Image 1 (cartoon, rainbow, N blue to C red):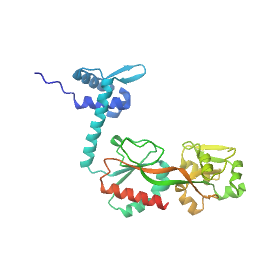
Image 2 (cartoon, rainbow, N blue to C red):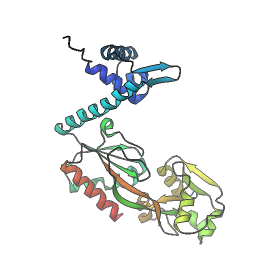
Image 3 (cartoon, rainbow, N blue to C red):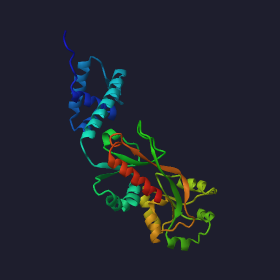
Image 4 (tube, helix red, strand yellow):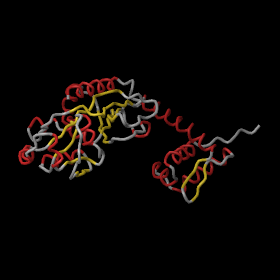
Length: 292
């Protein structure tokens, strides 16, 4: 009896990458091979299995039912391989968080972390959206609870966001603002990532926003905070991002801070879950979040 032809591992890897990336070109770029090499791998895989795995047309690549089943199984298999490799290959932890949290909350505390855990190796990566732990190499991630966690990941609660209206001392003095109702006459600043920040803040303090005029948008929180420091208007920001400016007096929060609807959570990769340094990092982040 003739033994069936076994597909090559390279062919299986190429097909799984096409299924994940959605195109031959993107798969070729991800694997650092040519478009032709990807095509040959798929053709050899289909010949070995005797089925059509995907179809191509003007609109892109589409998996057949057989291709979809194979891609699902391969994704699990390659993730398991990566997890097995990571378990035996020591490497630094990788922490992912937004650029704003990185700049205004984490970096000012990094020396304290190194002092508490001198042997901990920690890499930093910016990001604020979904994560593919198996392919991005991230160990732990700080995210908003509104973002869908990866499959099988149970978010660990960190803290509620406390949000307030902040501005420079000079701007406050020139504006004459003394009541929340006065803000409707001022230039209000916010970010494109949170276009409804002001309305949410008004809801948190149980007041009606009225007509919010002269809304000016910035790309990121760190640009927004800089604009407020320069006296361009009132900004609506989480307190944890302006702690240093509030302590130095560079920014003021005339109406204080109110608990917002958003919460911060921690995602821990399955590969990093059992590492002692992961437990140390998780405890440290939770402690620092609670204090701030």
